[in-house]
Image (cartoon, rainbow, N blue to C red; front, side, top):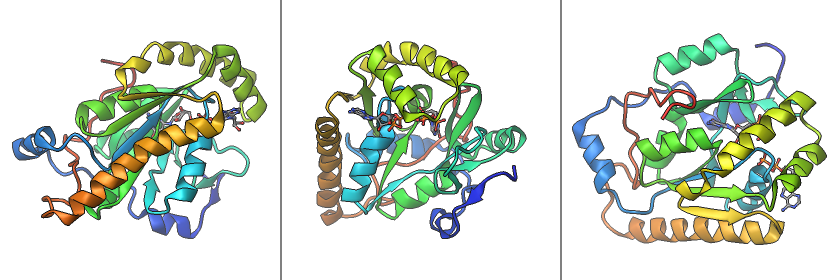
Length: 252
Ligand SMILES: Nc1nc2c(ncn2[C@@H]2O[C@H](COP(=O)(O)OP(=O)(O)O)[C@@H](O)[C@H]2O)c(=O)[nH]1
Ligand SMILES: Nc1ncnc2c1ncn2[C@@H]1O[C@H](COP(=O)(O)OP(=O)(O)O)[C@@H](O)[C@H]1O
C-alpha cells in the first residue's frame, strides 16, 4: 500500500514489527499459568467510538514509561494518520502473510478490515520491563485472554447506544456504512462486557480516565515492587506463548 504518510523516526522506535513469537513449549505454558495475577500487559477494549483512544491519550501523557502497541491493519489511513504511528497500514495479502507466519499475538476482522497486534515489539518491551497497552476490539481481547491469562483486561462501556452513535458521528471519521457496521458490532460486543476483569463506564470523561488510571497505577506499583525482588526469567509477569496462530476472526 503506497498511499500513506510515514511517521519517520516513530518507525525506528517501534523496531521490527515482523519479529516472531518464540516456539511454543510446555515450559513457557507453565510459566504463564504460574505467573502472578497482575502483569505488565493491559488490554483496553470496548466498542468503536466509546472513547478508548481519548482515554489512552490522557494516560500516555501521564505515564511516558508506558508503551502503546501499534497495530497492523488493512483499513485505509484516515486523513492525518501515519504509517508506524497510528497503524502499520498494509494490503490484505501482506496482512494474511503475516498471519500465516505467526507474527500476530491476535488478529480479528472488524467492519470489513483486518486488524492485528504484532507480537515481536510487545515481547521486546515486556522483556525490557516496560508496561504495554493494547487498544483492540473485543474478539482480539478474547484471544489475548486465552493466550496470556495474566494480562489485565479493561472493557470501556458507553452510557447508552445512543451516546455511542453520537460519539462516532461527532468524531466525523466514518462513512455511513462504517458507522452502521460499528453500531451493529457494538451491540454484540456489549453483551460480552462481563467477561472482562474491569468494566469501566465512559460517561464523564475525567471519571473514566481516573478509573482506568487506577487500574494502570496498580499494575505499575506491582511491577515496581516486583523489580526490587529477584528478576523473573524475562523480566515481566508475562511470556508470549503459542505458535502465533491466534484464533481466527470471530471463532470461539
Ligand atoms: N483485534 C484487534 N483490534 C484492533 C487492533 N487495532 C485496533 N483495533 C480495533 O479495531 C477497531 C476499529 O479501529 P479503527 O478503524 O481505528 O476505528 P476506531 O477505533 O473506531 O477509531 C477498534 O475497536 C480498535 O480498537 C488490533 O491490533 N487488533
Ligand atoms: N466521555 C466522553 N464524553 C463525550 N465525548 C467523548 C467521551 N469520550 C470520548 N468522547 C468522544 O467520542 C469520540 C470517539 O472517541 P474515540 O477515543 O475516538 O473512541 P475509540 O478510540 O473507542 O474509537 C471522540 O470524538 C471523543 O472526543
